[in-house]
Image (cartoon, rainbow over all chains, first blue to last red; front, side, top):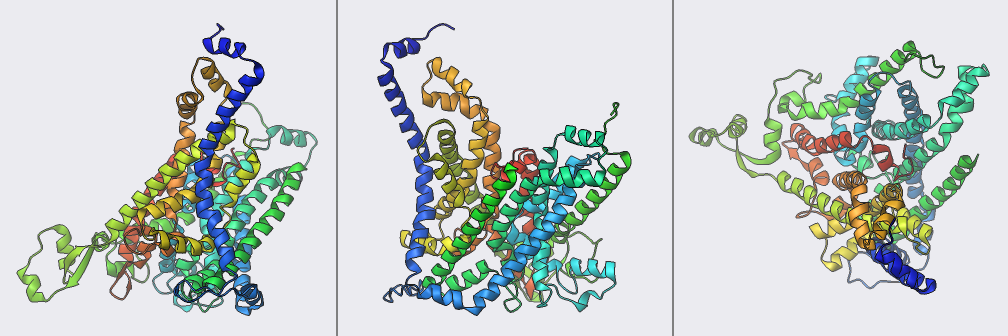
Length: 315
Length: 312
């Protein structure tokens, strides 16, 4: 390759100076490129977070900005952690997160395993299955209230068609015992494809040669499944659980449209509860402390989980 | 397949797997088909028992969606015969059209805020991702993790101070406020995804360009950007879908001028509760674009939903 002017200039410059000039301009470009992103995130995420922390030590009420704000220390935190209503909310959230993860993992993995049998047209059907996941949870959740109507709803009709139970005899979102399951069903419907897609990637990452070797060693299909398929897919599955776990812990839009937290407070997940405290009762200081507790919980659980995930990956 | 393979599933297995998957897909599609169908039902058909599978299609839902209506006396109706097909539909119910509904406006808000924030977050995200991919930045991993961690916050948790902040800056219920907010939320996705895409472009291309006398900046937009075009396009679609679907911030921070469609559609009511054909019509118009995009995106779907963690 012929020498360009740049090369000759570069050669003529003492290396140390050249490196400094090059480094400087590179660093400048790097910062110019990164700065707007960091700035916006600081303004819209970190600044509000710090503000929330500050508010959480006060009795501030956003609907009465003229009231003088008192510094009340940790009293908000104390009140939240000893509030029995909040524990009911937490239980509802735990129920929701646990069962959605359970069904989504079960169905998602099963579907991925079936799709990986590579029947004809599997790509087309995968795309169709994925559709619900991409749609607006609020709009879809609202429409599900129609499907859940006892008399005219498609869901109740389908259940009665299959089981023979009178469709008007039960109301999924009106009944205290059924409502927690109604939100689990819709979330599972929506997000099973997410777990499925990730599992499918895991299954496709397993090289055929491993199975061929196992076949040579006369390992049974059952044995192959448990000693090859499951361990190799596990890191992917755990990643899917992490994503879904965080998302469902924060769940708001779908459930608020479906049940609005009712009946009573049986499906009042933490985000819905928090919204009530902050934007209906306007207990800003109190709900700030609540928000901080939630954030620390998500962050803490996620960090522990990521450590476990990394251990599984190392194996 | 001509050669024998121990890992290729048998024909029988494929049949069973195919049947089960297709069965699941059809069940999973039912609610979506029902939305589509309900949009074309007349009011009595939509709430018939048992639920009607075959029905006389009607555009009543769509007309209700786009208009506000008033009841009128039979005398008035007789004096003012309907001029157009949609006026006739309303006329037959003993009503007249009073004016356009808010749906068009709300839908346009979704378009403006969606495209505005998508453009900004992809623009900023591309720059940041390029820098993270190519330059030595102090605390790079921490910064990247920080960017990702902003996604872990429940939207309601930051909504309180954002609400206060917007109120004092005069940004509440404005397009600009929502665009900035959604841009910030989408940045984590766009930076992570785009960094993955740019990492895959060999550095040699840029180095060759630099040797040819391009400046760093020229190398970036003449060499890297065209190479990353597919990645940028799919990132943009993901950002668009997110802003399009977002509900929590929209319902808390907008009420009138800048309200997007997701908080609006559930509030469409008719006489005595929700007007389901109109709701379904609105939902159809709102959901179909996303379905089209999903089909276009299918190759990059996995990557997008895992923030680039799984690349297939």
